[in-house]
Image 1 (spheres, helix red, strand yellow):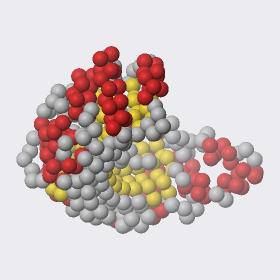
Image 2: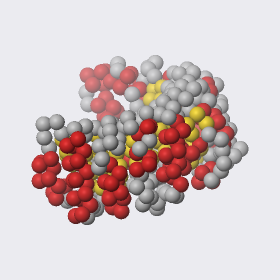
Image 3: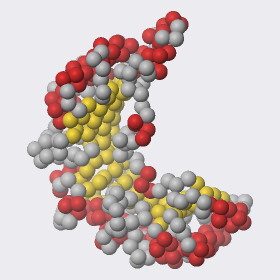
Image 4: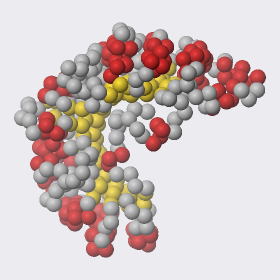
Length: 395
């Protein structure tokens, strides 16, 4: 669970801000009780539950009036949880966003709902429900649903309506790829793939209107074509270098898609020791204006070699370099790269991010010397491509 989620107040905790404000004075109590939007803005229901939790939840729901609800639920398995879930389901007609982290024993509560008239985004994670026999049509009853995140489930297991524009989920089997291509309105997508799938021979599918794609391994791209893609992020979640085929898969994907990228972000384990010159020379890369690279020290010289000439990525305006511990020689090589592209006139902004603290002081004088009228170089906080996640965690 994300750090920011752990800091979220449990809405049934009466020491939370809304409950406390209501006890300050009669004015605040009347103000809050006449402001249902304040209560409906975010309803967080998570264990542990007190013995009074059902009564507190009933009161809370009454305070929300008829407003649409942004609901976040985290439950395991107890009789008290089932009572809470039964109360929540009674308000399902007003759910606008739903994030559910629960044991599979709670699935019947959701499967009993045939219609979610207001639901727009959903994030589903049912524990212990990842077997091949698990199937659900729960999302098909949400005509306004446009964003879905399925943690550990394939699209063949949890069917999605055709109007989905934003999707985050796992490719488990070839059928998932076929169903992905059937999402005609899909624009943004975050995919991760089971290791066993990466070794299969599966026909390429085209995702016709996809513009933004995030994948956890380069080999995922060997199954896809995306002719309208403008933004691509590749960041392996596993430790260690990617197979040598990953870079080739990326190159073939871009050539096959005939897209025109505007933004490319690549994690440090993607590139092998081979210089990525062939990939950067593709027509699909000629339109890139923003390039973000997390570089292993051994890859720095190869990247410098590939990018120093302004004829490579001729439209590059914004370069972001995420570095671990560059040596003195690597530092000089990167400065040469920046200076060369700056002097060519198109590069406007360079961001340098260091994983280790203290390196920025070595760069300070050189950065000041490089900055000019139409060029800015600066040091920013560590923010590698792995954090460029569009959909993995819904807001």
